Length: 495
Ligand code: CA
Image 1 (tube, rainbow, N blue to C red):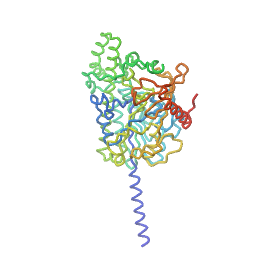
Image 2 (cartoon, helix red, strand yellow):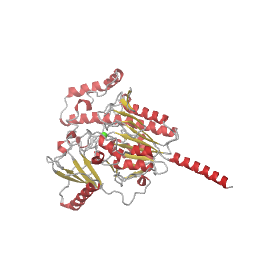
Image 3 (cartoon, rainbow, N blue to C red):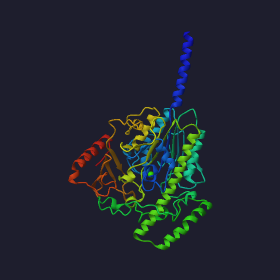
């Protein structure tokens, strides 16, 4: 009798143990480069109708969309280092794009692997050193190119022919097909797109070809309401695009067939532009149309990629037990303030998209406009989803209670930002703090030596700094206190 009870208990234990291990959710992290919320139709805005992103929007429809996901340092490599480590740039050691990531440090993929996950990364890496913590990596060298990419596949150079967004999707699907189905997976599928220089897929050249894309209201911003920092930029649609960003010249090494197809579209239009010898606002307007159309075409390929991956999950019975996260390394200027590029703590590049689908955990169609979240939280979130321990030295917090609709009462009210790559595209070093309603920015370099303060509700485009305005003296004092408190909390070495 006793023996049969023990036998029964043993079987029960075995079954429940197996159920538990098979119940650990997979994590599919879809990460883009320079993808602004303005170019995701789920976020609304003037581009939503002409350039919809139905597949990315599906993640929002079936999950949660965050309106206040702010980065810690709005630039490619540093943002990726934050995602991997859950630590600010000064602690993970990757402050500027010229840095090299120290792959010997603790990262989320390493901890997930320890927790029994199969880990892989396909696509853009951009951290110079070889990826660590992955069972499989297949990454572009540096920025990579839009056509015919060379991938570093587990240490081996492999040349691919085709459009890079498609190639990354193909390789992601191939890894999914060949993975060990007995283990949960953590898969980072990371596009180069829509990072410049914006070379669309040939099949998308006709998209938007015959329409005028609406211009942002700040296209001709004169920066008169701010400190002198913004006016020193070198990211203007008017003067800083150069022939490659304008697609007067190609950046990728193309096959003759690809070149012929691109020439067919671009050559007559380029000829007309060069002959017209445009000046002033007309020139800026032409640059904007050229830029935004190619950018949105690059996004279209990304959206198709998301569709293919979601379909794979559907077709293979993986949808229910896979957390899908869509985000970008930062936001981007789509002509706002006359700019392309990122870096500033102003909203368009400070805010990044975040959409999360987790069936059974996240209520479908939820829009979170209230909670301030960050790419600093991603590492803790991955670990929490995997039910793995979260080390104390991570500086973000798991988003899982927020995703379940139970934001903890002590969730952050203020977010700290710090940009280090002084001079890149003319942007000086700066740091700041926001509570989502007001934003305080400090430019400490002697050539600028300035503060700015914005009321985001009355001035969402941040055109008029209110620093020193007596009407906001309490707000300003509070933000100054919070700035110092957060620098102390995050161990930021400052002046
Ligand atoms: Ca980027």
